Structure formats: C-alpha cells, structure tokens
Length: 412
Image (cartoon, rainbow, N blue to C red; front, side):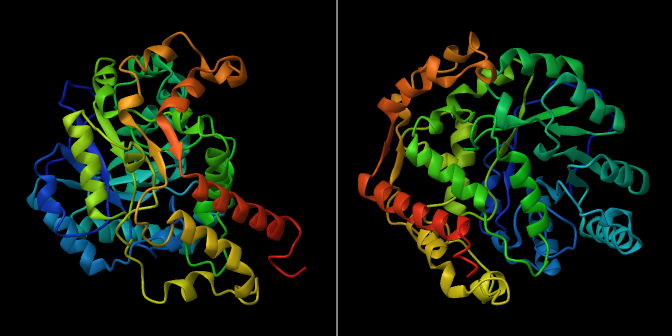
C-alpha cells in the first residue's frame, strides 16, 4: 500500500482523483495512466450504515475485497472504505455496534486499508482514538459548506473533507474562504447531477443510511424519483446542478483545490474510465450526461443473484404486483438494465467557454431562478430529451405518484 501522509499541514500537490469502485480487477491496471489517488467503496453487508441503499451494492466478499485492495496497491492506489452513513439509528451507543465497528476496522487494517470516510463526528473520534493509523475523510453527508464547519471537523481530527458540492461548487467566495480557513485536504465532487441546494438532501441521505443494511424493510427511493421527474419537467435543472466541467478544473486548482471525487459506484468500467479520462485530460466532447448520470448505460450493472427477490420481495409490506409502476420506471430510465442510447443529451459544445463567469456575480442561493434565466438560456441550447421518452416516463411518474399518495401501492 502507498505510504499515507501524516499531519494536517497543507503542501502543494498535483491534482488527483478519488474514483468510485466497481471492483472490476481488469479496470485497475488501466487506472495507472491517470492520477487516481484512491478508489472508494464498501462491503455490501458490513452492518455499518453507508451512503447507498443495500440494493445498489455491488456483490463483494471479504476475500475479493482483499484481492482488489492488493491490486490497487500494486498500482500505487489506495482504497478508501466508506463508513459514511448519516444516521446509525442510535445503535452507535450500543455494545453490539461498538464491537461490530471495532471488528470491521481491525479487519480493514488486516486487508491493507488505511483510509476511511465518515459523516458523523463521534465515529471520526472513535476511529482516531482507537485506530490512529487510519486517515479519516469527512464525507459530503456532513454538509460542510462554511469555513466554520470546516474548522470544526479539522479540529476534531479530520485529515480530509469533502465539501457540500451540491450547493457550493459555483460559490467562489465561499470556496476561497473555506480553503483559506483550514489546512486539511479539501475535496470537491466533480460530476454529480443533484439538484442545486437540494431540498430533498437530508431526507435522502437518511433514507440511504437506513436502507444500506439488511433491515428487511422495503426502501422506495422517493427522492431519486422526485428529482429525476423534476429534471425531465425542467431541463434547466441539468445546468443548474453544480457539476464541474473537465475544462474548468483549472479554475478550482487556482483556488487551491487539487482533489476531486468522481461518481458513481458500481457502474460499468467503460463509464468509470470515460469519466477519469475526461477529467484527467481536462477535455470532453459529446454528451455530458455520460459523465453525470448514475444510470442509463449501454452495459449492464453487476448485481447479486436473486437480486429482485432479495430486495423487493416484501409481501408483508407491499404486494409485489403493485410495484409494477416502479419496475416500469426503472426499465424506462435504465436504472436497472441497459439502454441502447441515452434519451438525455447535454451537448458539451453548447456550454460556453465562459460558463463559470456567469456565476461569479450571482449568489444562486439567494436568487429566485425565475428572475435570472442564465441557466435556462444555456439549457435551451445544450439540453435535449427524447420527446417520446419524456412523455412515457412522466406518465409512469404520475401512476407512481397516485399509487404512493393514495395508498394503492400498499393496498390500503
């Protein structure tokens, strides 16, 4: 494994990337051509809440994780293990949970892992006191978006912090102030497509935390459905989402940001490689949606055996037959299966070279978008959605809304 940095003093360094894991061993050697510093992920059933529902987890055994971490180490790439649930259901104050997290961290150390990501302050303190050899990163679910919040986590012992990229990636005064306030490494998520200042964020991340374990409870991702529907209804949301173009990486480097996180876990290797290549080369031509969306790929996503039965067969909670609107939506949008072509297109050539300049004099959090129109004007040129796809999916959303809101999904 590569030697981990010690201390919190910031030193100049080359730009590097933290890449999502899909555990494909054949992808690992190809990453050597790019400045990938680490790959992040977690075991699907480790008993500690994470940042994705259990049904999105890539099948992975402890033995396979050991081999994967070893392959990364041969390429000089670290593995960052995610303990990033926003909520542990107060189980962190129980003896079984304490034993479980201690045993897991011990196992991770034996596997050669020396980096973890957390989202709660108590877990950061626990790791630092019991396992001081670990480098601890604070995840985006901690919602660090001000200098004061960043200093809190650094004072608590954080080695790195992922800033609340969904809201502040284009707030340059705020980014500069945070960078000046702390010495620890700061990381920005470059390729998310979440709604700007997302009103669903807290609800979503807590839903993920509770759905990341084997709870036996059905999890319906209402938030994903709601924001996906919002983007189809208002395509300007694709522009308002605070992603970073590969061509604009230098703007952030000039402020002192040299670590960028690339999403999404479990997606096909072709897509992960496309993303790290584009951001490493600071150039991308074509459909930006290919860098941003977490679904709708031409290749299948690897899932565990009996996937549907394991995760959605909950006859005591909901009749499986009543889930047809949900499965129809999943099929149409490519959430669970491949699509031959992407029905959503964000033409990179239609994003102006001066794109970020339009945000320098605007405080988007304080603006009513209806009085501005900047993103709407760019979306009119750059964003296109297949009309047939849009109409069919929105119709399914109406059916799903009716089924959930009236109780028809549960037969009540």
